[in-house]
Amino acid sequence: MSSNHLTLAEELILITLDDSSGKLFPNAKPFAIDIAIAASLIMELTLNGRIDTDSEKLFVISTIPTGNQILDNTLAEIDSEKTTLSTSAWITRIGGKGESLNQLIIKSLVDRGVLMSVEKRLLWVFKTRVYPPTSGIEEREVRARVMHLINSDEIPNPRDSLIVGLLQATSLMNHLFTSDLLETLQVRINYIVNLEEINRSLSAAVQEAWQKVIDSTPVVRIW
Amino acid sequence: MITGSNYKLSGRVDGTNAEHYETEISDLLKEADQSFSIDLSDLNYISSIGLRIFLKVAKALKSGDKKLVLVKPNVVILDLLLMSGFDKIIEIQH
Image (cartoon, rainbow over all chains, first blue to last red; front, top):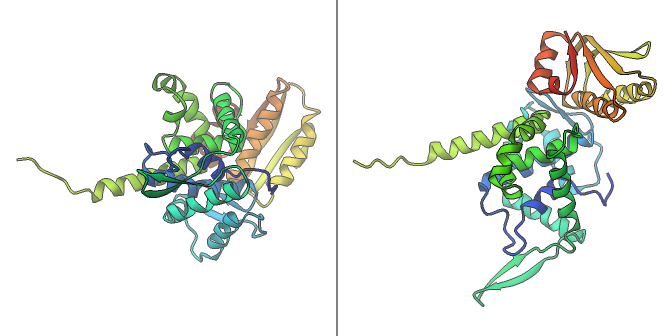
């Protein structure tokens, strides 16, 4: 794969990253972003012809390295698993790496000159690191692509369907559109998302993780 | 498998052979009239990568004001096509 080409994971991080705080989209459920990042790696591997999926399973079709370290590590992990797992099971498993995986992707964007890494002080004491965009062109390009697709009746290409699925799963659509507009566009968004099996697996993985959060939350009874 | 100006898919279509079929179909699209049909009656299995062929072909045809028609999918393949919402953009004759 071309070294200039941004991966879906990198595109997702660009849209998700709050430039001033250096944190990932503060209004999204944290696990949803971790899960979506995991899904984006699987999606990229299918677009690169390394893995394939159906409604029941995910399977490796080629172990030839892509040249991207994060994708190749993910591919190696999937290939070394003896048991065949569903796509949503893989998304959940890889999503468990959470923040460490997100930081690797941010680092790759810094290494490629898309983001800058800047140390900042909060209240003159606490050090924090923020990642403002170098030019912002890449992020604007992704947003424009998504907006155009959603506002048209074009048949989406697979990459664009997948990025829309990622934005939907992380509630980032609320960040891109006003609530009124989003309501109008929801049918089109659902249609685009549904075209790809991995988007449906992603949605199932997010729902499952959310259910676990609900199940583990103690019920407070007020008598 | 090529039959006239249309095409027939048989057996399994997944990431191991999808590129081959996509290339064959793309070569035929230039000669397509108003519509291009793919016969699915002998297709037993199709993966996500295989399904993307239909979207790419439909997109290419639409840009020339032509349409893709999928013919006689078996029940399992039909369910898959309907579940993915392909019937909203591709004509399915069953």
